[in-house]
Every structure is written in structure tokens, then in C-alpha cells.
Length: 394
Image (cartoon, rainbow, N blue to C red; front, side, top):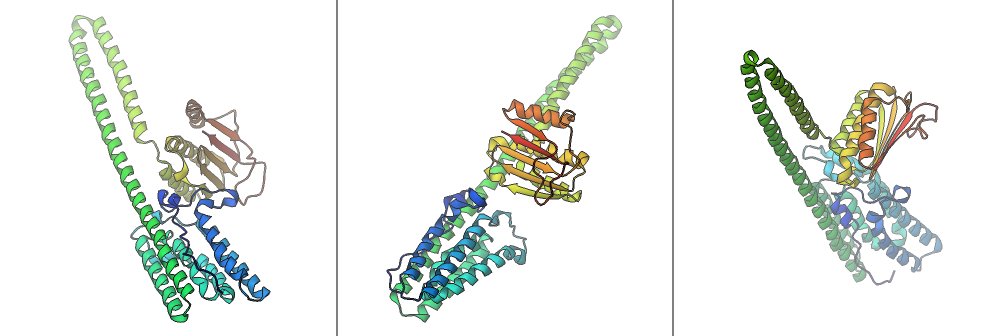
């Protein structure tokens, strides 16, 4: 093939990935993350090379088909890529690499078939491999694997052909892979800053709450002590005055208790990500099959606390009353949907928890929808006259 080479694309260098710490970006039709997949447009270049070559039609068809297959697998994988932020230093290497085996094997199969048409231009695939590897594994593992892959491809190309254009393309692809590495480094730093900010926010909130509890109890207990001492002195001299003082003691005690409860409620306000994991664990312990969809990171910060409360309450309600065997939970910006295949519920006979939840949601300008039987059963479940759907719209 005689075509002027261009530098390789840099998939994965999307700022969206960097902002989100490696998780999938904005998804649209068919659940595809089109933002992270935009780099697949550069695969049009090897297709042009194949179509402009003097190869037979059958070879061109095989080449174009395999390139399209490679592209489809890449788009599918980046839309469902495992979030590297979930990996810890103690995660076994086998567990870390397991999500890579199938997609890389399928991509390699397509890339291998395409060799009949693109020959030495296969270096164009390099940045796409590195993007999948870097955003699925820990940084050290990803860098080692990517460096080994880049070295192997460059060695094969430089030693296998004297074509200057091919050499230039291979070098361009290798250097463009550097933008993927930079994107991954940025995503890691952003994730680290996010964790530090969350830890600092938690520490600041705890300190604030401890001060509030101290101030409330210090003031209230001091006042209660004074009132009680006054009542004690007045009991023998002026019983009616002592009775008034004791009545004030009771009122002060109730007010102090309400203040403490309010502060403790704030302390126990659930974090959405933690609540999702808590609900997942609770359903598993109850032998309930649970399917969670959606991305917590996409939910605006101002909505997370209310959605957390809603998920906590619906989880408790299902565990106590539904008798369900399957639950589906969907978390999205401004929306929570929980559907089960249990015994259903009577919308007119809500418990205190759901009634309080509805009041809380409506006070925030949202809406709580209860539908029984559920209009759509959980995924994989047959439609029946049972079940319930709880939907929160903010």
C-alpha cells in the first residue's frame, strides 16, 4: 500500500475519563459511551488504506470487516470498562487482569485477520490496546503491559520491513499512546484528589458535629442543672414556683433531646456510593438477586443524600415486607428506580418510613411514585401480577 502515513490516534485521552477517574463516560443509544468512543473515528484511515490498495475484492472485504469488528469490540469495551479506581494495592494480579482477557483476545483475533489486507500497518491498533489496558488496570500494571506491547510492536515493525512510511506510522502510534498515558495519569491524580477531598470533608463535618453536640449539651445541661437546683430550693418554700421550674426543666430536656437527634441524623446521613454497596450486601445476605445499574458519580452532589435516603428506605422495605427473590436498582441523575418481584404493596397503606420519605422528597421539590404491581419486572424475570416499583424523581 502506498499512502501517506499519519500519526496514530490517542483513544482514551478523553478529558471525560480523566474527570471521572477512569469510569465510563456519558452513555447514550444502546448504552454506548460515545464520548470515550469518539477516537474510533481514526480507524477510518486504515479502512481507506485497505480500499485504496490493489488487493482483490475478497481481501478488501475481509480487511474492512475485521477492522470494523475490532472497532465494534473497542467501543463495546470502553462503554463497559472496569473502573480502575476500584482496584486496591492488595487486589490479586489474576483478578486485576481477568476483565482484559476476553476483549483483548477478541480484538487480537480481528486484528490478526485484518493482516491479510493491512500488512505492516497493524501498528495503528496500538493506542487502542493501550487505552483498554491502562483504564482497566492499576497504573503500574498498565504501564508495564503497555511498555511491553509498544516495544514488541516497534521491534517487529522496524526489523520486519524497510518501508519508511510504515516506520513513521509505527513511531507516530507509539508516541500518540503517550497521550493515553497522560490521560490515565490525570485520571489517577483526579481520583486521588477526590478521595482526599472526601476524607477532608468527612473530617470537617465530624468536627463540626462534635462542636455542635458539645455546645448543645453544654448549654442545655448547664441550664437544666441551674433550673433543677432552683426547684430543689423552692420545694419547701414555694411548691408552685418549684413546679413551674420543673415544667421548664422538662421542656428544656425535650428541646435538648430534639437538637441532639437532629445532629445525630445529620451524622448518619448516608453517602450514596456507600449506600449502594450496603444495599447490595443486604440483598445478597437475604439471598435476593440484585442488579444495580447506573453510575453514582454522575448523580449531582446536591441529589445524592436524598437518593441515599430513598435507597435505604426502599431496601429496608423490601427486606422486611416484600418477600422478593429479585430486585433491580437503577441510579441516575435526578432519578432512582427500584423494582422487585415480591408481594407488592398497597399504596394507600404506606408505612411511616415511606410516608416520611415522600414528605422529604416533596419538600425538596421531587416526586415519589409507587406502582404495584410493577409495570416492568426486574431484568430476566417474567411479567406477573406481583411486585412493586418505587421511583424517585428529583
